[in-house]
Amino acid sequence: MQIGQALFNAPDLLGGQAARAAVSCASCHSNGRRNPAFFLAGISAVPGSADVSSSFFSLARGNGRFDPKPIPDLALPGKVSRDPASRALEGFTRGLIVEEFSGREPSAAQLADLASYIRAIRACPDRLTEPRTLASDLALLRTTIAGATVLLERGDIGGAQILVQSARFRLGLIDERLVGPKDKRLHSALLDASRQLAAAPLQRDLLASWLLRFERTIAPRLARSERQSLYDPATLDRWLAARR
Amino acid sequence: MILPMKPAIGGIALILALASAQPALSSGGGGGGGAEMPSTSAPAYDPVVEYRKGIAAFEAKDYKKAAAAFKHVVAVVPTHAPAQYLLGASLMGQGDYKRAIKPLEAALKADPSLIDAQRDLVISYAQQGDTAKATAQRGAMVARKTACAAACPEAAQIDAALGMIDAAIAGAKPQAFGPSRALRSLASIDRTYVDAVALINEGRYQPAIAMLQDALWNAGPHPDLLTYLGYANRKLGHYDTAAVWYRTALAVAPNHRGAIEYYGELKLERGDRQGALAHLARLERICGFGCVQADELRAQIAEAGQSAS
Image 1 (cartoon, chains in turn yellow, orange):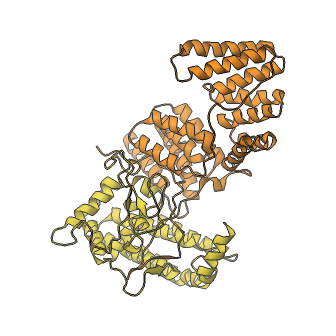
Image 2 (cartoon, rainbow over the protein chains, first blue to last red):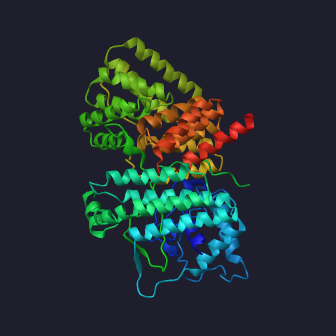
Image 3 (cartoon, rainbow over the protein chains, first blue to last red):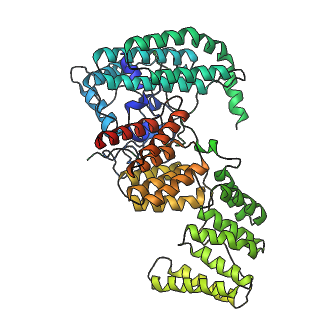
């Protein structure tokens, strides 16, 4: 299921315009639910909607009409059966990746991983929203690297590449939230970590040692900077107010 | 048939709110963001912002302010015909026909189809007493009318322009100037971007070019529009024109990922592998956290290398 979650958050799983805009499944389905803030003029009618049958994303599903639909909450029962026996969810997900968003053909194992994750999505009984925190981004980074390692074990080099790229993207998301005046060296450290991921050959032991090094040298420094970063709600409010 | 979704640019202003909270789930997640606004890397003046200021001032008939803003635009993008034309029109609005001539000539050079620029250039020549040039340009307008044969969509505009030209040559004070088209400042190009990309993905390059060129009037020299003009022209085999658009995009936004990638692809298509590699190196320098533009260009260079070997 963790590999499914990692792929769900990987922009390179999709292709074309989606990948170029760094859009992943999670961009519309935050935490697998729905992103009420998603808006792109020409694709969305109102925030939280999208016309996925626009030629903008893919000619295969382009219907020549502007017909955005509300982005569905994947925690709720949808039109596609979640029954693992039917494998309908796997087929539907493949259609989304390849036909709707011009992605490369996913392997059967990748589709199974994605379907497992989607089937596991549930609403939290005690809260409506989940704060976005450094911890949640770091957890996803670890899941992504772990997923890449498993995919390498399976011999799925293409899938591992998607996840390594996604890990670099995650580092970028963390980096852009560091707005403290003393974060210059931390920015450099994150950038170095990203370049090391790009430069290293795709091998399980190298990924493991990269993560270990990250945990020892960068993660603690990130934790110390969190209060002055955009992960901190008060800092985020001040930062946004200064730009209005 | 599934067409590969090649034409894309990283500068899309996709609104994925930098939210501090998202729908709750027992496991983490989220995503989005990471898109860099190209104009953040612009020179001292952001030509897109200056263009919008210029339009607002021009519409308010504050021609001095408009001219100052359009000057900032053409200093970065001298080939942007709308900005050159509107600079000339702003100077005419101040009664400065002498200084209006140069930007009007530049506008006409960048886009010879601009009837308004040709009309105002003749008027400015006439106001300066340069009868020879005024008459020559009038002749060009008459030739345009002949070619149109009253059947083209611009027939009425040409007739109106000739009327104003003849009045100006006869010594009348110009009664009106400025664009025949309505101007409206675009705060966002997202809609145009989406529609143009959809046309390009459908292989309808000429309508896409027309849409993008039209958008240049309202949005100014936005690097996404300029890059797509390069892309659509490249797909039509107009390599030199495409290169000009890519270079213009990079003049506005030197780190525009899409422009760097596509210009690199153009160089590769023309056999300039070293040039393409230089573009890839530039992308790898810019994309510290990875980007699909570098991945795509790298793959194309590798593919071209395999085909050649």
